[in-house]
Image 1 (spheres, rainbow, N blue to C red):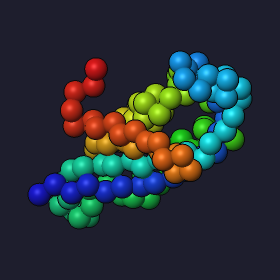
Image 2: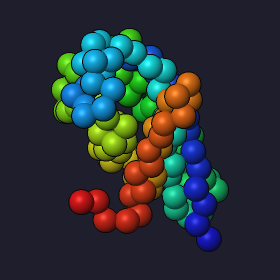
Image 3: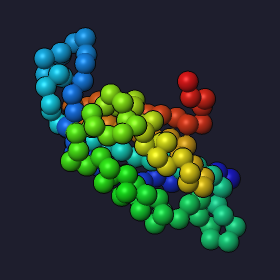
Image 4: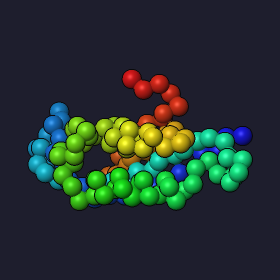
Length: 125
């Protein structure tokens, strides 16, 4: 049996973006409240019955939140342009050493209805 557990966190951050549409507003520094959800899939550990101790996952998400919250995302090392896609990859890479590693990362902006899902069960390319 495989189980999937999730942990959500949010962060407020500013960024700029070079776009072909809505160019003027995107080029100016502006901010959003981002929400993220990290999913971990695997079997239950025979000794403790957990896929992963959610306390460990919460702690790692909290550390990751500190790297993003109230920052200018344009200046976050390793992120690249602050797209939803790049945020998903950044979060997945930052947590890749978990055992088991993330199986899915979702990032969305509730206020505008935008979102992105990185399904790590499929090959990345």
